[in-house]
Amino acid sequence: MRRTELEINQQDMWRTLVFEQRTTLTLAVEMLLRCHLSPEQILTKTATALEGSHYDS
Image 1 (cartoon, rainbow, N blue to C red):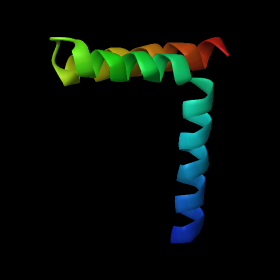
Image 2: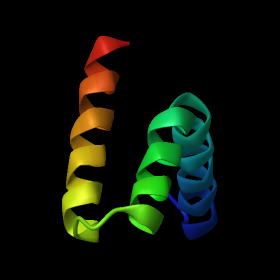
Image 3: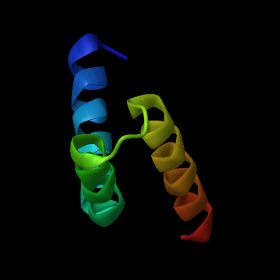
Image 4: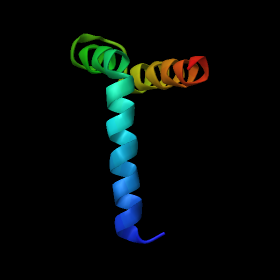
């Protein structure tokens, strides 16, 4: 796969992720801005939630 094809695939993947998981990602960003947890904790919990939702669909 050429570099431009890979970049296009990655852009499509991110668009799909954001579209399908908008609520979860929005909550994660809000938590990053307002919460006293470490960013690593928030992102780890978000990744776990996204993985779980992937199996539900």
